[in-house]
Length: 197
Ligand code: CO
Image (cartoon, rainbow, N blue to C red):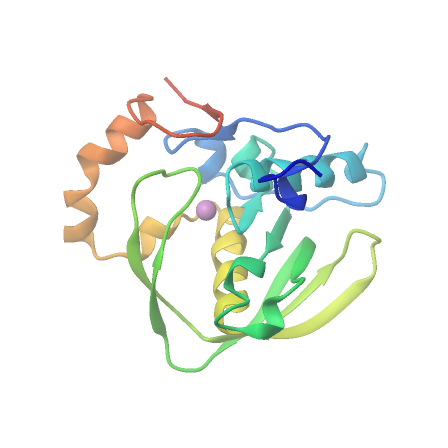
């Protein structure tokens, strides 16, 4: 293992360009898949590699241009604050959020498709979710804290919802110029992106 290269970036899969804000795929309601979906294992591996290459903690399929109900999460970056997140690496296929509970709390979120913008977003602290994992095993689980937040953010992507849709309209208006710049490719990022214009 070369010095300075973490295990997670030391991968040999393919890194997809991340679709930028303004691309219609980010506004589509993604479709469920089944076990016949071609080369799903490779796709999932590439999703992880793409997420690690861009230092994200979650990535949804629409963000790499595929409107299917799949997202990946690796929340280990938050393990200092929430120890259970160590080795929290999961694949969610055809997820359904069954319940959201508790008093909403704020956290400063970002999104790989909307670089350089961060906003405080209110979300419920606990969710119950049903999903298939990468081996098509069905789970029903409860997640809290940062795991719940990341899952809610990624789940939104499958519904065509972006984190900036949760901020108040006046604040969103103030971001309009920045969002236009992102759609036009006028933003500097250290990962590959695909711009709509
Ligand atoms: Co996002």
